[in-house]
Amino acid sequence: IATFLGRKLQPRPQNEVEETLKRIQGQKGVQGIIIVNAEGIPIKTTLDNSSTVQYAGLIHQLVMKARSTVRDIDPQNDLTFLRVRSKKNEIMIAPDKDYFLIVIQNPSD
Amino acid sequence: MKLWMPWALSRCGGNRNSLHRNRLCLLAFQRGCQTRPVHTAEAEIQPLLNADNGTQTDPQDHLIYQLPPKGELRPESPGLRDFLHRVEDMVVKELASNAKSHAFDGFDVNWEDQNETVSCIHCLQHPSAQEKGLQVTSISWSCTGSVIACAFGRVDDGDWSTEKSCVCTWNLDRRGLNPKRPDMVIDVARPVMSLSFHPSQPSLIAGGLYSGEVVVWDTNRTQDLILAQTGMSTDTHREPVYQVAWVPGPRRGEMVVLSAGSGGRVLLWTVDSDEGRLVLSAGFALIRQQVPHNSALSKNRGSSNVGVTSLALSPWDLDTFLVGSESGLVLKCSFSAQTLAAAPPDGESVTLRAPAQFSFSPRGGPVHSLHCSPFHRNLFVSVGTDGLAHLHSLLQPDPLLSLRVSDSYVFGVRWSPTRPLLFAAATGQGLVQIFDLGRKSLRPAATLDQLTGGQPVYCLEFNPRRKDLLAVGNADGSVNIWHLSTELTEQGPRETAKLEQLANEVAE
View (cartoon, each protein chain N blue to C red):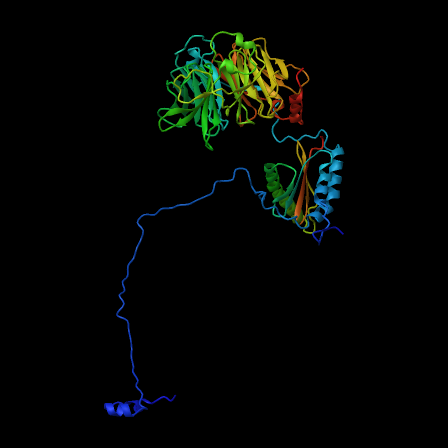
């Protein structure tokens, strides 16, 4: 048991969140990752501030719209994944109750 | 204590003796009180003057939401670890299969009409200027992209010219557009050599004259259109002003006019619209002895001023600007240079500074046009009398690439605002050559013949709002508006990456 000045040292929790983000970032063509909370505020990002804020605000609205579209068609159904493909790249969004994970990938890179 | 009934109380009293002897007699007093009468009055009021007032914070320019400031680091969000645990596998699987997928190969979506051809949609002329044989020296689009202004003057005349000329504007979005009749004609006492619309106020135009004066016109006015001018003072240029531009001023939201002329001066003017004057706020003087790495040119005799024929502002770095000179020098300069210019003071109201920081490999003749790439911070293209377009990186003196544009002089060059690899050059033979750096061949991707009978084309500008319009000003006094094909305006995949690759090549 490690001690310092007589107090037991707690083992540092491994930073699983950072490790997971690194693994996702390492996939082929990934340009950026943003994690947004339920209110649409970005809490983790690998992009610069202004892009992050822009993506977070716009994608939050899009996910809400997509989710309500799915549920209006069938109230028992729910949104599980959203992909927006454009000329230059693809935005993948994994939604959840408390967070969204946004990954921007350029598959031809 | 017992309460005495009133009759018992009244039996006490009488003479003093009975009072003293009768100890059971109680003294009781009754008192009432009341305030003095209260004065009341009624009155009414009503305001005669009303005033409304309100306050509002400044709108946030680009932010919809705010990132939490660095100081208050939130504690690790609860449930984030579990959330990532849940979604990680699914996301990684999708990313991996997307990278390998061929599902979208060759899949293209047309959101807009495809235009296969390049065509000249307007040929704008001002007959009275053409009769006098005036040439179009400079054109400028307004910030809204609907008005084109052109300046008339003379480029080929060697003499000091006092000819009257004009500035004409056409509004291309107006329904009754008459190509032979400008919407507005501003008469000017001298030939106008350069023109620039204000980047955010669509009614202000700055112009540089052959006499060295700089004028700002306000097209909203009905009477005298001159908003401010330098006049002929000790501060003004003594030589023609070949370039004017609007640059951000010291205060937020303020723009100042930059003017550069063949007298070797680059001056910054603040607009004082109350007095109608342009006030000199800062100035730079280019002296040959102060140009870095100048061994080759120091043998020249003659004026020590480096006459400026072209100027380019960098959209990436507000402090940098590029200058092309009459003798073929291309210099990188800085607005914040502190070295004092070695010019003898000539009565100017501000001290002139020497802005040159870096010298690119010189050309044989005047550098007529420079333009910085809007897609890469280090690239710019320059053209001059050697008929070549040189693609330079800001980081090295020699050009990265030199393309043959024409056998005669090249007067103007502009990068496309939408395609990173495309630029257009105006030649002395009356052609506009459009080059695509993504192509293997060094021949132009398109050639636009201005049908001027071999007379030169002096200037060209892409429309800042409508990406398919290109305006070209000719020596015969006409301005042609070209509608470009989709191939020349739509950005292809990976163009920015290819441009980056080009910029990183080191010249042999």
